[in-house]
Length: 340
Image (cartoon, rainbow, N blue to C red):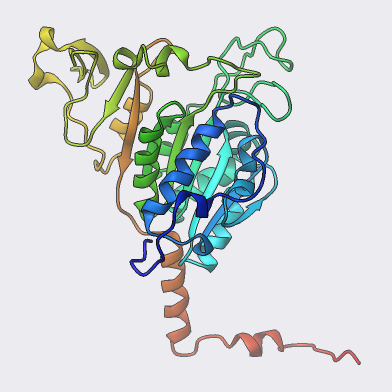
């Protein structure tokens, strides 16, 4: 919702005067820097921007943005943000959440915000651990993960955040990571510009309670071989020489192959605008573990009716209908009394 009349801003205009309090080395710092650096480029104003968070390390985010914001209650950020977006569709509303906040107690609120296609930009920091409460396993922790609350290893199959979002029919789904500011900024830009619910999973390192969780994928020395960059309209290739790719097999399943073995014409071309979410879902589940090539970028971006716009349209149509209810008369119907 950019406005060409908005006064130009700088990164400094978006940073609050609050001391940033995360553990030294936390991946949250990189995400905050990416957002603060991006905001001046979006053509929006701080006074028309709202950041809503729940509970967790990431949920301190609104304190550090010089915008309107709310540090709300555990898991309820999508519900509160939905109210803001419906009441004030002219505002830019962001949701900051984590894998525990958003996928445990807040899972129900998250999926309904996505299925309704509320105009929210949702950033989910995924470090696969409860950091604020000191290291318990989370809904994205791997089976066998030993933590303070799973001393013999977790037996819970973890959520794949992108699968959850796609299963809820989210109209925009993407993944990025905290070690590449430019990739984060471009992903956040596309999410913000999308009209409707935009969901971005961020691989984020918790260097105190789950350090190095994503090292085999996101460290600069291994990115060429381990990160699959999804680019709309282009073959899905990766590797230092772009020698490997993603192919759809005769059974409909996706496979990692050597281009030389199958030919470039067999490599899948990425289509983020495909209406059915099934292929995006398959891409989201392509990596089998944290030591196998993993897709990043925009998995799905489709257009469909946005929730606040539909609510406004429905209310306007009802109020114009002949014989529409009179709210004032309804409130004063039946028994009433006066208080002296």
